[in-house]
Length: 223
Image 1 (cartoon, rainbow, N blue to C red):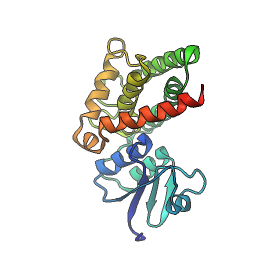
Image 2: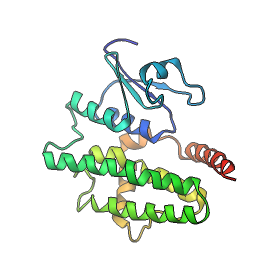
Image 3: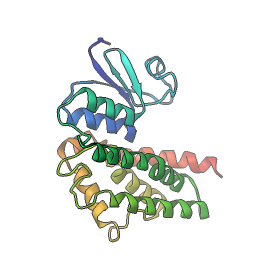
Image 4: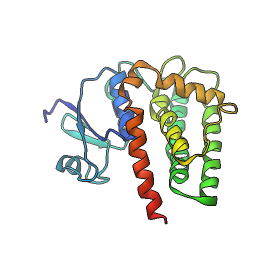
């Protein structure tokens, strides 16, 4: 691995690795992508992320970074073209806030809806709906969270538009109400149809197959 190279270690089905890929592509950064086998973690992954031992990992000039939101900020600060974070300190803080809100509130609730059953699942699904409605408020009257162009929060959160819908189909529970969350639903569609974003997305059928298999594993463990 050359010392001046940019390498992303990821897994095709990871939305967190996808975040990083989107950022690199939107900024026009040349990079090498290394696909990781999460069932048999490579020496490369363990070398560059010995703490968490998971993807994504960004390696730049021989130095590694883990955790997708940390990586996104590093990318934005290192390569100034096509900035993702706003220059205004208040707007920058809001972008960080909504990105962390998704990771800390939306993601755990979606995972619980996917992995639980009965009343626990119903409670988790309601939490997902409440959190998504709250996320919608962050759009205000803008096309994207970043305004008229895709920004940090869009890159950090836009994958939900695909993954939540996969969960809906697999477990048979509606999570994105197209009437009460019309603005959020439209944003999901608009973001995912952006040429660069769409080009990076794995095939939906492949994602569905992968997540159905994961769902079977999770539900078998709980029975």
